[in-house]
Amino acid sequence: MTDIMIKNNKLQISDGDFTTVSGVEEVKQHLIAALNTFKGDWVLNKAKGINYSYGFRNTNSMRNDVKKQLLGVKHVRSVDNFEMVFDKQSLSLKVTAIIKTTYGKIYLEENINTQ
Image 1 (cartoon, helix red, strand yellow):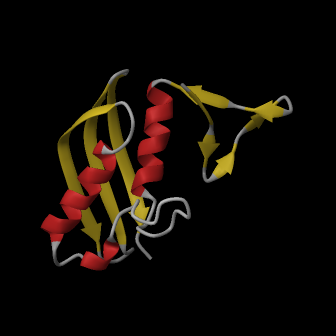
Image 2 (image 1 turned 90 degrees about the vertical axis):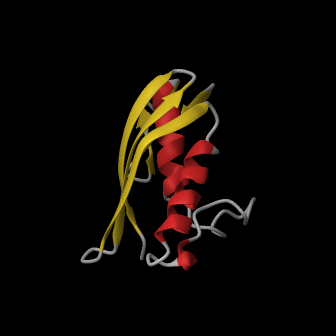
């Protein structure tokens, strides 16, 4: 499978054509998109995304929701060494994990702006 490469929320173009990614890099791109999708944001599926309305006081619900999003990405087999830390100063969420995929392992470290 192949997808269009996105960096810093911008489609990547090279020599007048879209740059593509596949394999591990494609899965990593989809993981980052899943973490940055708020519930109700995606027009085609309002149920998709992380429900931040739980608030950060209920970390168990938030952890389960975030892990569910990661596990919902195609080709993801497991989520190991999962950690989630909320930074009160920047109102961001740092997610780290080792993701096992059909293509190999991905070390994921993503900061999510929750504002």
